[in-house]
Image (cartoon, rainbow, N blue to C red; front, side, top):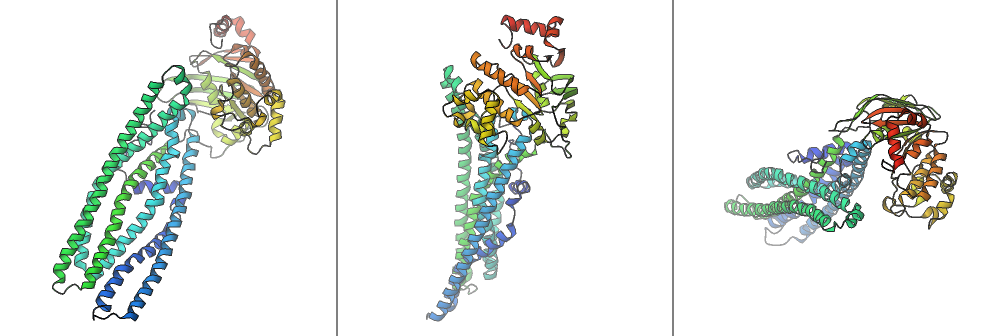
Length: 597
């Protein structure tokens, strides 16, 4: 599923930006916390801007009217203006500080909520989206909101307050000129309302293209070894260039629209100023308007137009922020597939049994891959799961670890339905080691300790020793402090598995799921892995997806899958003697023509 069509990325520019921000504030309450006091402070700070025109009016009409300068009166007016300006400046600073702090806290909450929701999605949903597009949700999309709230939020508060206060003073000074200014502003506002729809759709396109670019670039960088191995550098560059070009076109369109919007504000300012001058001079000639009032009114027109121009510029940022909000809310609106139980049931102590009852499963938009599956694994039993590619064995273990939920039927662990088990309880008791153990870009010790936060270094070292891997860890360049690189690339596939197995050992699970750990390693390292697996599985329930059937030979029981069904179930020797599906798989493997050879 591409970023352009993924849920949460569909263009919806017609929706109100304000409404979207309100929804975001419900997800992240810090965004709106204390906004009333912040608005009051902004109004007080804005009132200071009115001191200049009112002071000028008093000086022109009262102090200078007689032709002589009343120094004492000028001094009183000046000192009063300075004091009021200092108070207004402090209020503006405090309003900005409060708004920036609320933005930082609220957007951190929004990032966390989005990240948490992504982790409540099933593996199927996450695999349906490209990684770069998901990363864009919690990085660049939120960043657009951060820029708008921290800058545009202050501008909106100050601008709206200034426009309202200036309007009130205008009406008091001269209702006719005030009506002229407001009429022009209303016409301009109607035009802006129409224009913002076009601008909003353009910004939606930019956010979608940005996600596509991140996804494409991330994929090309991650696949660099394959690109070089097949001499596909030109194709990779062409793909990256295509994504960048699409993003450039979208951003260029937004830039043109933004420039047109800003230019319209300049035209509006010039037209309003000219209109006030003409009407003011004509009406002032009859004595209806004093010179001081006309001069003050021209100052007020400037103060009225400045925030309007600023609000026009903010509108461009607001549309970009609105596009980011819509994409984030689109993710949050998706129902979480793996819902936490309202009243969780604790798993019983000791080795955990597994039972699947009439289980069906189908991936979204695809045909069923498991059909009416009934199987029971006793506590402490060591079971191998085999079958050809696409037979359903990997889906089976995903269901047991609750990486996905069944379409029908139910999965029980320790006689407790998995839907009733809290996620934290499940992860403490059930460990899953995939075929290619994922490692984070840190040290070996930190990767192992990731499973048990706060575990001390000595316990990590002991875990390696208990699995018989102490000499291997001592042979690494920096021992436990060896840096593994991004995704563990500095270690071989087998070495990554050793770290992953030690991480699982540290958890001490009561149910262990292994996706064949020895399927892609050299013979020397395979011996270490097998010994580590034997120690890891001893005394606990284990399900091992076996690509090499030597693993099945050592298991107490073998489950054979074919076409999404459990077709055989029994011990290795009995299944060989039966001459069925398992015997055929084993014969192909032994002859070197089947999977795992």
